[in-house]
Length: 388
Ligand SMILES: *Cc1c(COP(=O)(O)O)cnc(C)c1O
Image (cartoon, rainbow, N blue to C red; front, side, top):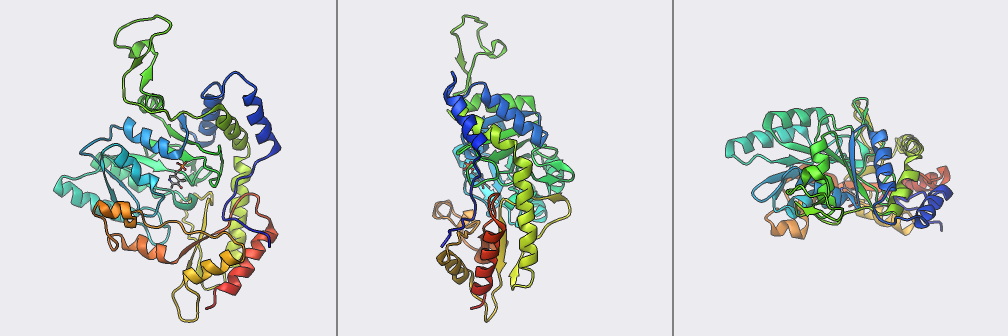
């Protein structure tokens, strides 16, 4: 039986050569290839500054630090995300809260956000940062979120870990038209990989410079940033409490090589998604909704089971597919129901749309190297498993 994973990287001979070449060069960690990789991502997404780091988690953290998030501040994100989108608030000593999702797109609901902001304004508890997450690769309603940011004075960090190569209102995700910073992930299961890696992009040079400082110990050698105007060759100053979040040259070389295939990667995912849409149209499952304001990159293809007599439960379908060698998965267990977040006072029932969605959600395989025949196998196993 051939195993079909839910996602998988595609590593070409050119990718391997790029990494090996760097291994033979003078630099192993952040050197000349890291800025070239930053440039390649900026060329694709249209922002003007990029800060490559060793994960999207690190990118979210330096974005929050650069925007001044700290004790007494609040950060809001969605429950339907990976835990990192919320944890970055806690790393900074801030409080986290959640905004429920839209039942069609599974993205942050701009209506729920507007209601929650109006209530927070009355109680003096407005957030400093809001992190919308472009779930499965489909952009959130950034125009509405950006307008709310102007009205209420909060900053916006887009978690685009799923969405490199996606478009919103004719512009690439990452152009930061309605946000301060956009973050990408290059984990192997994402669209483009550097093994581990992430990047924060922005159009604001001051935010970019602060993110660079936080990436590398808060240390500077730039004369205009030094407290004492020294110019000895060895001199540097630590001016912030930064971290070591640097990306290696091997990661950047892999990322550069992968970026040259971004269009191809996303085109194949979109084609596979269109084929699923057709092949699954007559099955009693809910297919992904595509809004008209953009084009998703299809990091995930998520279906929902329907709770009706005669139909398999999500768990039964999951177990059937896994037993057939098909690596289905579930994205996401609502963050506020995690034991750690319950200890902070959150409880099931607080974000009912995310919880209802989670109860029936199933991510089925979609990745660049997926053959048409693999996809047909997935569809056959789904047809078998969907009846109770
Ligand atoms: C993968 C992912 C992250 C974390 O990415 P890493 O690069 O693994 O740190 C954050 N947010 C979302 C939505 C993700 O899918």
